[in-house]
Structure formats: structure tokens, C-alpha cells
Image (cartoon, rainbow, N blue to C red):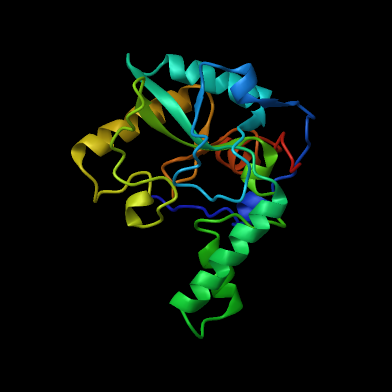
Length: 215
């Protein structure tokens, strides 16, 4: 199994950021063909039920959706997230880890947290408008079997998890093919997390710098 680089890996965080000041767009108003789960099911409830992304990201999602099999569409679960909300989520996760793994070092908690939650002080992906959490669904609104729910962290959350059904693996491959085709990169700890323009994208693609900073 290839090494999985965490969001706080020095090779990721060392990537410089040169924000291109691309505008943010409200997907629900500007992109009616993209679907967003306003119920905020399976995601944190702190943020408003709005889908805000960088324009280029929304444009690329539109193209990716057109490449999906007939009757299947993307379902966006989470998009832009303010740093203030990221701090709340991160602190809650650190508290959870302290209870689950008592008497560990602070470094252990920070490193473990980075598998699932980006550090709020290190340009978290969702605060750039370049990261999205999404899944697949039918046009009738039924989510496809992906082997694990969005934001339900476990070994099944790994993008190439082996402990999921054959159908779930096939569905993940559909998502992977469509997203990679238009330049998105995946965070391997979370099959649902994809990004374009942020530091992780720059690291994976070899770009000299990220094009989106935190807002």
C-alpha cells in the first residue's frame, strides 16, 4: 500500500500559497444542475446550509458530473467552511482523541487528528473554497452505496478500503474517474474529500504553489 500523506505532513504544508483571488460563487444560485444537501446530513451542523465554492471548482464539478453514467449525479455534502467553524470541529476532535487515547502526547493527538480534520491555523482545505465533500446519487435522490457514509471515519473511509462490498468499490471508481478527469485530487483517508487549487492539490500534482488561500 502506498504511503498516505496527511494534511499536516511537512511535504504538504511547505507548499507556498499564491492566491489568485478567484471569486467565490453560491452554487445553489449559479449552478442549478449541481446538487447540494441542504439538510447537512452526515456533516457538521455548525455552518449555514450554503454551498460556496471557487468558480473554477464549480465549473469543473459541472464537467465531472457530465462524465458520470446516465442517471447518476454528484451530491455535494460540504463546500466552503469558515476558519472559525474549522476551529470548533478541530477542538472537538482533539477532545475526542484525548478521551479515546488517554495519557498520550500532544504530538500524538495533533498527528492523529490530521488524518481526519485539518488544522485550523494551517490553511485548511475547506476554508479555501477549493475542497468539497461529496458522494453519488441517482437523479431521483437516492445515494449510491459507497461502503461508508460521508464523515463516518473508520478504516472503510479509506478511498481504496478493502473491507467494503464489490458494488461500493465500483461506485467509488465511478467517482474517482470523473473527479480525476477534471483535475481534482483525493485525500486518501476520506473517499468523499476532493480538492482543486489548495495545498494538497499542489502537493499531489507537483504544482509550484497552491492557487487558493483561506478566506
